[in-house]
Length: 92
Image 1 (cartoon, rainbow, N blue to C red):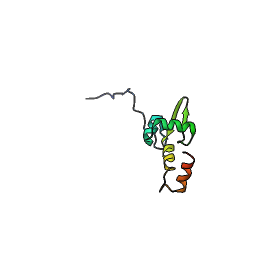
Image 2: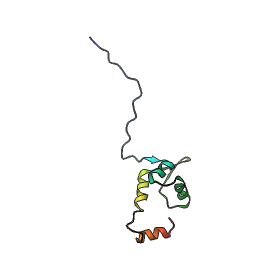
Image 3: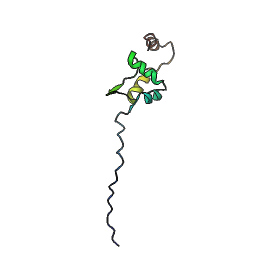
Image 4: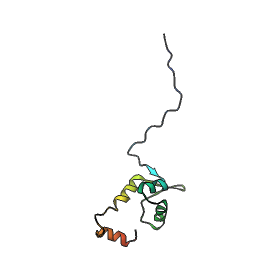
């Protein structure tokens, strides 16, 4: 018995994004990632001191790598660490 090859014209699933490609989060997702209030990130965009962000039209987006770098830059051993004191004195 001979069977004809069946062609599947249904849409194929999207190819996975390379792990090297940056992943972007919106304000609410970035705040959740950092366990901060979304309002805190909004304020930091205005006054400074927050993580780097990108604007795509009216949309504000954060790259995960920028959020991690910003968080890592705020790693201290103790509250009397000179870097911590300098950051605190700057009000950030």
